[in-house]
Image (cartoon, rainbow, N blue to C red):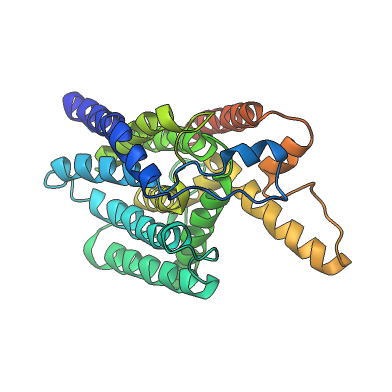
Amino acid sequence: MNTKILLSVIMPFLISVALGPVVIPFLRRLKVGQTVREEGPESHLKKNGTPTMGGILILISVVAASLVFVKDYPKIIPVLFLTLGFGMIGFLDDYIKVVLKRSMGLRPWQKFALQIVVTGVFAFYLMRWTDVSLAMKVPFLDGVYLDFGALNIPILFFVVIGTVNGTNFTDGLDGLASSVTVLVATFFSVVAIGTGSGIEPVTCAVAGALMGFLLFNVYPASVFMGDTGSLALGGFVAASAYMLQMPLYIVIVGFIYLIEVVSVILQVSYFKLTGGKRIFRMAPIHHHFELGGWSETRVVAVFSIVTALLCLVALAGVW
C-alpha cells in the first residue's frame, strides 16, 4: 500500500516535470498567450503573451497515473470523470478564446449547460454504480451525517458547480490556484488513506501533478493553467468530497474558493444596485489585496497559509 501511494504521487510529478519543457514551448509556438485585462493591476500587463492552457500538463499527468491504479481502485473513476469532464469544458473555452481568437470563449449559457450535463452524469454514476451515500458527514461530530433526501441531488449540483466556479475565480495570480489546491488535494489524500476509501491514488496523483506544475507556475509564471486546469481542479475537489461524503468540508478547506466567488457575486450585485459603486477595489478578492499594496507573492503566500491552517482544522474535525 505504501509503495502504491508513493508511486501515485511521484509518477504524476515526474510526468508533469518532464512534459513542461516540451508542452510550454509548443504552446508558445501556437501563440496561445494570455490576454490581461487593462483595468486590472498594472503589474499584470507584463503577463501578456504568457502561454495558457497549461492545465493540459495536470490532466495528462493525473490521467496517466490514475490509469495504472484504476483496476485495483475502481472508486477513482467518478473522481477522474468529473476532473476530466470539467477539464474538457475548460479546454474548449480556452481553445475558442486563444486559438480561434474569440475573446468571449464559450457563451455563459453554453458553459453552464455543459457543466450541468457533466454534473448530471457524475450524479447518475454515483447513485447507479457506487455504494457511496449522498449523506454528508458533519465536521467535528463523530458519526453524524446530514441527509436531505430528495434535495440531495439539487444540493449536489449546487456544490459541484459552485466549487468549480470558485476554483476558476481563484486562478488569477501566479501559482495561487495551484498552491491552494495542492493543499486541498493533500488533505483529501490523508483522509482517503486514513479511511481506506479507495480514491487515494487519484487524490495523491493530483497533489503530485500540481507540485510538478508549480515549478512552471510560480511567480513569475512561465505558463498559466487556464480554464483547462482551474475547472478540472474544481471538479476534482467536488468529486473527492462527495466520494468521501465530505462536501460540507469544502467550506473549510476550500474557504479561499468560497470567498473568491462570493466576492464576485457581492461586487456585481452591489455595483448594479448602487449604479456603479463597489465594495472591493476589484474582484475576485485577490485583486482587491493587490490593489491595496500587497505583492502578488504575498497574496499567494497568505492565501496558501490560510488554506493550510484550515486543512489542519478540518483534519481535527474528521477524527
